[in-house]
Image 1: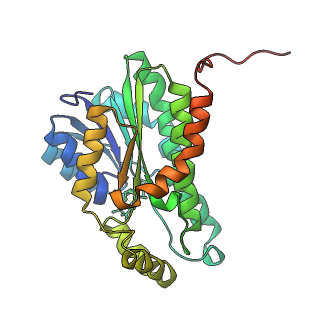
Image 2: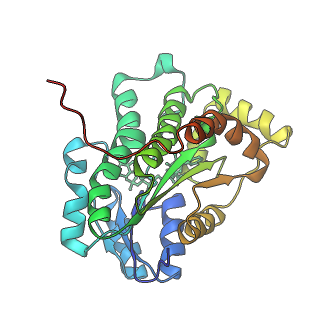
Length: 269
Ligand SMILES: NC(=O)c1ccc[n+]([C@@H]2O[C@H](COP(=O)([O-])OP(=O)(O)OC[C@H]3O[C@@H](n4cnc5c(N)ncnc54)[C@H](OP(=O)(O)O)[C@@H]3O)[C@@H](O)[C@H]2O)c1
């Protein structure tokens, strides 16, 4: 997709990877629409980049309901949706509260899936679009302290594959972004829980993991949208983990070649 003058909705656009993604798309001529809780931060960044700010708390179902419609009413059609907002509460599942479990699942998976659901008919009505879901290599390999986080990221990766199956033959591309450690507030927080930090240290020592700057992630996400790439995998040295988990999905995809992918439900009553 030529992103010039296209509107790109980025959740979690107030800081970290989302902020870098906003800079990358604006630098390529796109108009960004930023979603996060920190109103001042997204208003400031939107003003700097010539975009719009749409404060919302994605852990609140009421804020997520009808969000695409509200944003399009306020700023115009969304051509690219980047589901980037994400949270974790790095600790043992034994110490995780029911509220934390629900919030992480809601922000990382349910809100992202719901925004896809809201965006797709709108994009199709206008002839197409692109959806980017920011997942994690923690959705492939599981580390202590990250059971809930990993499960939501695994769900988001798998959901994106399902989305692709539903959208086959339709003019909406999807990209799943599987990331290793990227220095941001989130990584600092994760490193405060020793079992997780020690597990990461093992991977660093084995040279299977390396920290990559968030600007590099943003450049690759931009390129994926421009070139219609279905995957961004960072760091490259960990690609094998992602490919192994992708294999059954790809096999099923090949086995389903020729089976019609769109339709209506059969009324059996
Ligand atoms: N950093 C890493 O090592 C790493 C690795 C793999 C995957 N990822 C994924 O990359 C994405 C970005 O992470 P990051 O490292 O940039 O994290 P971050 O620096 O902590 O930023 C998280 C972003 O999500 C927003 N957010 C959090 N809760 C929200 C809510 N309830 N409603 C709306 N927005 C909310 C935050 O904005 P407000 O606080 O203003 O709401 C912020 O903009 C996440 O999906 C994360 O899982 C990160």
